[in-house]
Amino acid sequence: MKSNARPLALVTGASSGIGANLARELAKDGHDLILAARRIEPMRALAEELKADGANSIIIAVDFSKAGAAAGLAQDIKTRGLAIDVLINAAGVGANGRFDASDPLRVSEMLQVNVVASTELTRMLLPGMVDKHRGKIMLVASTAAFQPGPQMAVYCASKAYVLSFGAAIAYELQGSGVTVTTLCPGATNTEFAEVANMAGAALFKGAVLPVMNASEVAQVGYQALKAGRRVVVTGLLNKIMAISSRLAPTSMSLRIASWVMSSAK
Figure (tube, one colour):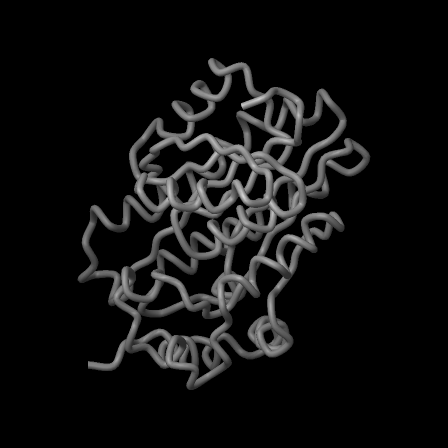
């Protein structure tokens, strides 16, 4: 990779879904990429595809569910003598079901990926951006961040953390030249539903709101990132639902969320 030829973006969760599509948006807009995720083969295919946009890519296999993964990635980047201009925290995992019956390991993985790894990676790369007085960070949250979610209690709580964390540091960084954008997509057609055991849920069947394509979400999110917007909810109906969930009585929000997130048996 030629240093300083193009701005460099690090995208986590780059093997599929919203992360891969954000990488495509960045490549089209003149960035080189570091692609980071567990699965190497999909990232190799993506890197080959991005060559058509003139993008050079580095592929780094990282399992963010393991403690220390973010620190290891940051050290790898430093060892290569690279400086990150854009950080996209798109790695995320979920699970569906009652909390008392949930797999303790899966709970730990959700917290490690959705909360700990993204927080640590942001903390490690942010000072370099502040020193340069420029940089952009995206945190991928969810419309699940706007209300408690029975059947997905830990996932929704983790995304509420991401939304709160992103809004707070965006405020702290005013005037620094660094912006933080928190992306809150609703149901999106990715591998997430299958992996989280939610393929049969009303939310992903389009029974509640339209299910968006990952490419649509990425396009909206990337334009918000470029504009330096602090929070973006994708889709008009998702925006209305996000606002409504904050205004509705908690008991009503919980009943609706429980139905929306429960998988059909």
